[in-house]
Every structure is written in C-alpha cells, then in structure tokens.
Amino acid sequence: MTETLGKDEVLQIDGADRDLDIGGITELMAEKEGPALMFDNIPGYPAGHRVFTNFMGTAARTAVALGLPRDTSKLDIVRAWKDLSRQLDPVPPVEVATGPVLENVLVGDDVDLGIFPTPQWHDGDGGRYIGTACMVITRDPDSGWVNVGTYRACVQGPDRLSLWMLGNRHAKAIAEKYWERGRNCPIAVVVGQDPILSTAAAIAAPSGMSEYDLAGGLRGQGVEVLYAPGSDLPVPAYAEIVIEGELPPVEEESVLEGPFGEWTGYYTHSGQETVVRVNRIMHRNDPIILGAPPMLPTVPAGDQAVPLYSASVTWDHLEASGVQNIKGVWAYARQLMMVVSIEQTGAGDAMHALLAAAGRKRTGGMERYFVVVDEDIDITDINHVLWAMFTRVDPAESIQVLRAPTTAIDPRLSPDKRAAGDLSMGIVLIDACKPFAWKDQYPAANRVDETTRDELRKRWAGLLSM
Image (cartoon, rainbow, N blue to C red):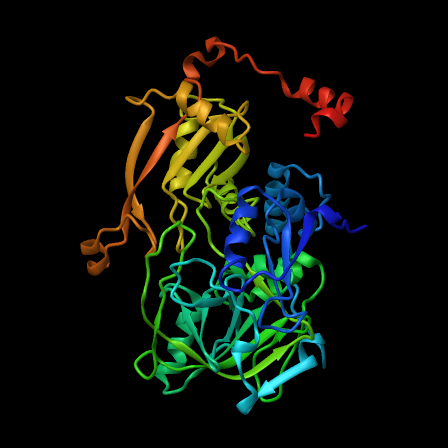
C-alpha cells in the first residue's frame, strides 16, 4: 500500500506575487521545515498556472516520495535508498502514444515562455529561472544513448532559454558532438515531474545508461514516455511542462547567464552561455512549475531534507573500499560536511574511513569537511555531531588537511585561481571518535539511552510528539 501525505504537509497559497513573494515565502518555510507549498492565483496569470516548492523538504515527504512509510527514520531512508540503488535492475522506459503533457502544444508564433509564472527566486538573480528541478534530455548522435540531467535554466525571451552546463557533464559532451559536425543539438527541458524522476536526473547515471532506466528500476516499472512529432527525444508522458528546441554552439549564439543564488549560498557564476532556441512547448492543463530554488546550504531546501545522493553514494564507496562496521553516513550543508558513523574494532578504523570518504571521485561536488564518529552519535542531529567534535577531538592529533578538487561555483576560489582554471581546495579530515586504545575507559555520557527513549516515546506519544 502506497502511503499518502496528510493535509498538513501541503499548503496552498493564493495571490503571491511572482517576483516579490514566491521565492521569499519558499525560503522562510523551508527554514522551518514547513509544508510543501502550492502557489496559485498568481497575479497576472490564469488560475491554475501554479508553482510548487519544498516538495521533499521533510523526512516524511521524502519517505513517501520513495515509496517508504512516512515515519521512516532519516538514516533508514538513506539506508533504504542505498540498498535499492545498489540492487536495482534498470528498467527501460515504455513508449506510449499520448499523455497529459500533450493537452496543450504550442509551436511557431504561439511559442511563449512568458505564459508561465516563473519566479525570480532571489533578489540578486539575473533572471527568472524556470529550471531549478528540471530534467534536460539529450541523445548521443553515435550510440543513441538518452541522457537526462539537471541544469539551471533561465527564461531569456519568449522563445529563448539559457542553460549553464558544466564542462564535465554528459549533456555538454553530447552537445559538443553535434557542434563538431556542424549541427545544433536537439534538446528538451522538462519542468515538473514526479520525485523519482527528479532524483534520478540529479544522480548522473554512468555514461551509456539512461537515467530513465534508472528511474524505471527505482519505480519497479518503466517510465511512460512519448515522442512529439518530428522529435527524437523521449519525454515523460505525465510531465507538467516540456520545452523542446535546439542548442547552437556558444560561438553562434550566446546570452549573459546569471548570476544565480546557488546552493553554496552565494552568487558566483555569470557569463556568456549557450541558449535553447525553443520551437515547441507542451504542457498540461493547469501546469505546475516544480521549483527547488537553492538556498543557504544549512537550510533543508525543497529536495534536500534527507541527503539521499551524497550520503548513499559515499556509503557505497566506503563499503567498496573495505571500511568495516559502518553504522551510517550523513551530509550537512548539502555535502559540505560528510559525517560517517562506525563501530571501531581496530586502531586505524577511523582514519581508514576518513581517507576512503575523501578519496571518492566527485563530479561537481564541494565536500570540505569529513568527520568520523562513534556509533553512539546520532549523525542526523548536528548538535550530536558537534558534541563529538568538541569533546572527542584533540586538535593537535585528530585533524588532517589535504588537497582535493572542488567545483567552479566554489566561492572560496580566488579570482587568480579561477582564471587559471585551478579548481583545487583544501579539505579537512576530523577523527571525532574516542581514542581506540582507551575507548572503554572514556568517560560515560549522561544521555538517556535509545531503548529508554523508545519506551518513553511510546508511553508519552501525545506529550512528546517526537
């Protein structure tokens, strides 16, 4: 039986202004881990042209989106996702003849991205970003491989959309193949899809595997897709909005893209980027823009209440590296701090875990701090992690500093390093475990144990509500 969300998990807001209200309200509610927000009756737009935000901003919503009981604990959600991701068999999409996304098809002079109430999410943004939780679909001209990724997309005019695609991502590599042959790259941008598709698009499947197949494996059945007339790109039949067009090389046409308030909490990148020449828009009746605007990384933003990808991938990597007795992995501030819980059985266990975690290959990540703690620490509670760091770390012995790659949006990169293409940064390894040699003699903690906590929650459920 699939669980559903209670009425308290979704709040409808009528009359919010596209630029003055929606972004700010979304951020304020995300800071409180509040409900998902459905904005309707937006001034200047027809009723039913909506914006939906904070869609996975609590553990309960994340669990339900993944088909788990809504009361699944945070760490068990990560564990379930890790196990499912490891064991799943890819399931290819299923082609269908029609779907709700074809309820409205705009071509030629009717193409107008301005019909959608795309918000300006942050005051300093250089435009209105319709693509914050979108799917960007391309097809490799050699193998036919369909790639699905997530890139920020800004409305630049009625029939123009800009994309910022980092150079090490699959879509950019595919586009370059077309450009080398003197062709524009066919592309589709999906705005509004179910959470499994959103999560799969952000994962970045291995080259040659379509994220559609990954999503099908996660669902247990193929994603229903369709092809618009003359298009070679499969799009979700149940999508809210699909924007199709072609991507010319930046030398032929470009536009100033950015700045945009990114997940680091800063405005960093702005420059001439490629555009999508839009030739077709398809959308449902009463279309919904799915919004996941980046906020300060300490905010449990719309799709990050549970750090599924960063925690589960790191957990998988640790196990593949031979790290023993892992009790859990968690990420803070998106993935700026990775925390690993282990049960120590030897003197080198903590350092083994730290080096393994820091050694995972990253594509666009910005992990800065790696912390290993004992199994008695609740790694989903930042106060517990800080307690371990403050009381079990000897700064003279427990901290190591290394160099590692970072990302182009890292605000700490100096202008000189950025200009030189030097994307390297220091990372910190922190052993916040009890020293193994005398851990059994470490002073006991004055905290109620987990068994007693569970009993208290059952006896006093109405009072404690936790």
